[in-house]
Image 1 (cartoon, rainbow, N blue to C red):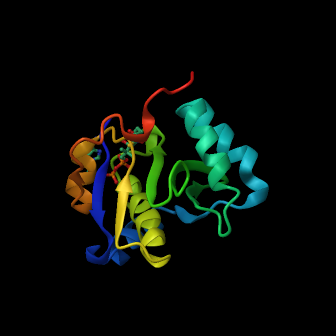
Image 2 (cartoon, helix red, strand yellow; image 1 turned 120 degrees about the vertical axis):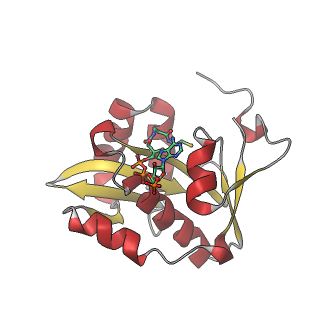
Length: 156
Ligand SMILES: CC(C)(COP(=O)(O)OP(=O)(O)OC[C@H]1O[C@@H](n2cnc3c(N)ncnc32)[C@H](O)[C@@H]1OP(=O)(O)O)[C@@H](O)C(=O)NCCC(=O)NCCS
């Protein structure tokens, strides 16, 4: 799992992306502290315990560093930043039934814009799964020598 680097000062305008998501009746917003258990449960059931742990860290930030996509009082996806390391993006995930409609990209941009807005020039996608997704959607490039990076010696 490598890390990837993103030029935050060069992010394209995201307004059309957010309009597309809103037109599907989906709300993009930060999770709230009193929803910690709900968002962590969502990650645990749909993704992994480790991602639930990272969400619990994101929920302690002010402002909360976890974005969620909701529809009809249900979570469809999430994205976090500054969980495992400062300046890191991730984890992120969209439930299978909601994939392929721009939601993953919109959640990616919400978190990257948040990193940019707190002063980072570059963001790091930590421990990447789908490299093509990040290369295509935000121009991310692979960081040489970043595997395993900070993800060595992981406890179960
Ligand atoms: C990766 C993930 C968040 C993408 O969510 P999504 O809602 O399906 O993505 P989007 O619909 O916003 O896709 C935006 C664009 O990226 C492309 N894309 C989506 N997933 C991709 C992938 N795995 N590889 C390459 N391109 C991908 C789409 O085709 C789309 O392209 P288009 O704009 O030309 O139509 C989702 O597949 C997921 O939750 N995967 C499992 C968890 C995971 O791997 N998280 C990342 C950990 S680093």
